[in-house]
Image (cartoon, rainbow, N blue to C red; front, side, top):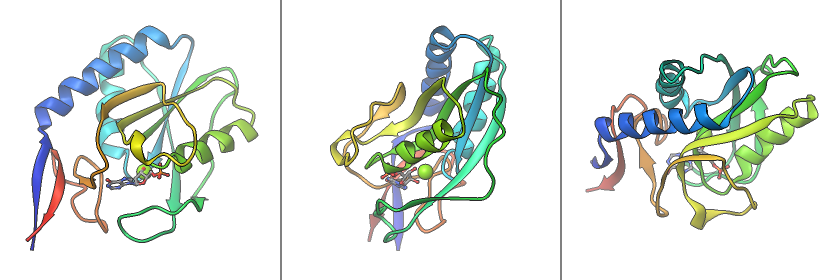
Length: 175
Ligand code: IMP
Ligand code: MG
């Protein structure tokens, strides 16, 4: 049996996402395309783009789907694009949105992919940052919460595909 211990409530998440939207709205100029890294970012992205719109920054929304092969609780460095390449017009600023930056491999791969496709104005955003786990030197422009090296689930984030629909964020406890 596993249970989930709450780390951030739905309300705490909503308040922080709203705060992030205001930070982004202040710092990003020009037309904005938000690109969500699937699957983990889908709930965060849905809340973030609506908060951005309310903060006066409507945006286009695209997705890219990455997969990293490794054991269930540990991503390996081998990241691949699965699915299509996002549709980005050159004159737009791109905000790359992920759920968690852990080793840094996924966000680095996604950024390089967009740069190779000709996108020059790229900013990065993550709900959660685990800096203690970094393998690649990346600094993320907008971070929701910095957390210790703990495995988290909920609010779109999974453990072996479970818990994505959980409205809050927590750690999995094994009983
Ligand atoms: P990175 O490439 O190591 O930075 O890995 C980032 C990806 O690994 C995230 O976007 C998640 O999909 C996954 N991941 C990292 N930590 C966790 C966690 O605590 N719970 C669930 N997925 C995680
Ligand atoms: Mg992810």
